[in-house]
Image (cartoon, rainbow, N blue to C red; front, side, top):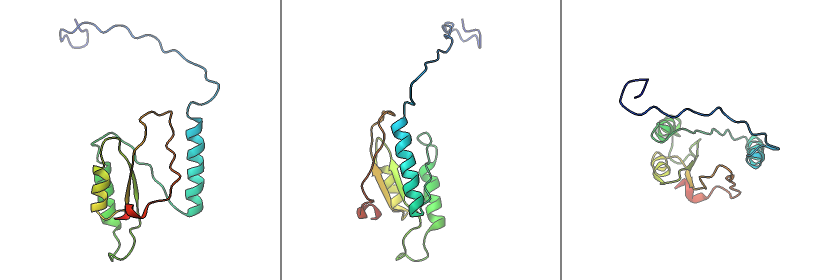
Length: 130
């Protein structure tokens, strides 16, 4: 029987002590190099980039929609001061919501494997702003 709450569940097996594995190089060395190149590129262009990452349903898109309304240009003929690249593995719902809020949004898809870096060397498509 469970010793924590007496729920009737069997006792969980003991957890092994953690093992340490020495690596000759960082696993994500290519990702680190790409990230450094991206930071350099954005800094040279005078672009501030924020990576917003959290679990599904935590409010990331709602936060961006509210920020978009707050920063909205006074005139529809002016460019919006923000743009979003959405990396959702399943749908383009967030990109569509942000476009509806007036924000240029680009939907990208990528491998779920963390060992495969996301490399996008293309320019921002003009269709993303519509």
